[in-house]
Length: 334
Ligand SMILES: *Cc1c(COP(=O)(O)O)cnc(C)c1O
Image (tube, rainbow, N blue to C red; front, side, top):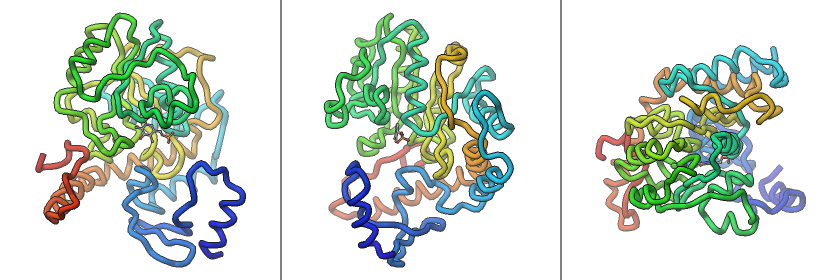
């Protein structure tokens, strides 16, 4: 089937949520993709920050296929070994032995879980950043600053206040004893890859502690090795109360997680939140295989290749390249 044929069929049957697809892909391997007409591409988009280990990664593929062949799904009334193991490994990344995990299928759902959890503090105000992106469901959209995404769907869940990204004084002014949480991305990905200014996460930690609010870091795009660390914010020496993950966690298999530490870990009680698919055995097997690969050297590789790529692009001295931005934690030059 040619790309043109499939593009026509797509236009006739798919809701027009994404515009016309530029390519129709047939397969992928490592950093390469092939379209339906047999053209090969180097994939620098990685499925929007998802396939960080490359397409058709053998470890992830084997884990998913193996798990699906033995136990594909059980209800969350029950549990499975891969799920418990993945939760233990994610919780351990925080360094807090009391950390707890809630699994989801996507980033926006991880943020919904965290948002609901903040309400259980008894407070309702959340401070988010200008330029933020946290997802498309109603709660996550309420936390997303871009008016283009928000306005057609208002009214959204309330009491979300936006302050300029990196503005310590504005954050300090906005934070009060009604504030449930302060929500920050370590690098604002959708906003054009804007790293958090130096010292801002530490300042936010202090401000959150000062008013008794939770510090919530959205690592949906930055986590799992994409900035050279399991969790990018740990490079700043900051501990978060809530961490949300998704994109890279399953290397393409849909899986997300909301991790809570300290007092936030015990807020959620039976019946208050749920999911049919979240953290099912196959999703968990994918997550475990990704963590295996990161531990086996992919994390170091991300740091090395990140630094090399940044230097190489800067070295081009091309007049159209103004600067190179990214997760500064992994770049020797920063
Ligand atoms: C992509 C993204 C989300 C939303 O994730 P989905 O899986 O698309 O729902 C949330 N937060 C950040 C920082 C993201 O980059």
